[in-house]
Length: 507
Ligand SMILES: [Zn+2]
Image 1 (cartoon, rainbow, N blue to C red):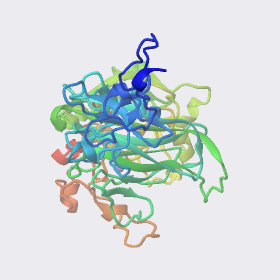
Image 2 (cartoon, helix red, strand yellow):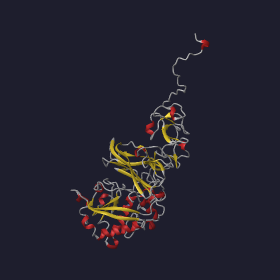
Image 3 (tube, rainbow, N blue to C red):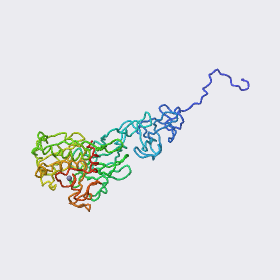
Image 4 (cartoon, protein in one colour):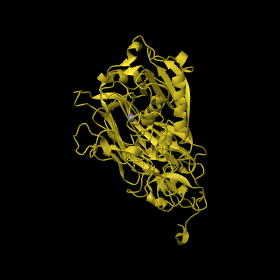
């Protein structure tokens, strides 16, 4: 019998006297990384639950736990991003914030919530995946400041799109954004209606609202909302609207045309955002406009003779003078003939459908050019009240070619007006391209519409949305954008110049 109940030394080595720790799985409470199982780390910064989780570079890695990829700030150690839950109601990318915990990412930069990413496609249109400010080794959606004016394009959607079912989308404008164009384009046909039907600015102001749209009242962005095939909007479309930085919400889509009784379920379509940015968010005082001239067979001038044609070159000189007055250098970058076996029919434009067809005759090309089509005449039968020039839209598709709105057409006979000093070609050329870039008439010929369904009246009060153009008839008539052409009227106002330079085609 052992004495005194003392333990007999069995000769076996003593067991480890250290504390055995079960290393925690995902969600286990912890205080250091070593307490978490392999591959997990312990979130322990302020604003995060102190639990075992995974490091991350993007929200998608954090599903399906409902967590977000959020900053874990560690005293004395590198800051990192981990899957965690800051606050279920915390802000989304691009929304305003006062402190980090206001953001689902626990990351507030210059009062804007930023989210982590590893590819541009994970960011809202307009933003890029860049090195995260103040967080070494991490990338977040945002903007590197530009050092020179720049225009960036973001293809938001390119593929099948349900007709009559616009979806809400967002994009983000950089702090130095000065203007943007947004458009929706039917890639398969021309008979459906395309529309940017709603646009809400970062401050929640509604800039476009299809539900309350009427011809009697302007909206912050002036636009005819329903256009066949393609509808583009330009912000700012006046000299008083300023592009805000931050998150915009919009609906853009294709719609069946009740008048044409179309019934289409789906179409291939494209939604595109193009943003112009400049250092400090200051609209550049100068820019360059590239125009490309096309000549219909029988117009009286051809690509081969245009450079030596006095009328064409005099008109171009006058146009250059008008645009130079607001800082824009006009460059004629090419002279081409309208081609195709049926091109002769464009010599005289007899119907709106012919104008539509003509505008499609440049299928592709640079994104910073305006197409100018010269024809001999536009017949009265077209129903355009004897127009001597027509712009494809106000504002025209910016550098988008091959659509039924992709250009301006000018009648060489109709503008002649006796020739010489009476010639209207220069004024008409400046005027129609002005429409295409976003300018409305200083004053319309018909009285302002006063009821929503009214015909034979001028929308939006019958004057432009520019603050410094005269509204009286005599004053308005001394401007390139008066409804009627006159020889020698080659001037834009400073306010009109701002809209022209805001165009994403002018660079
Ligand atoms: Zn006009």
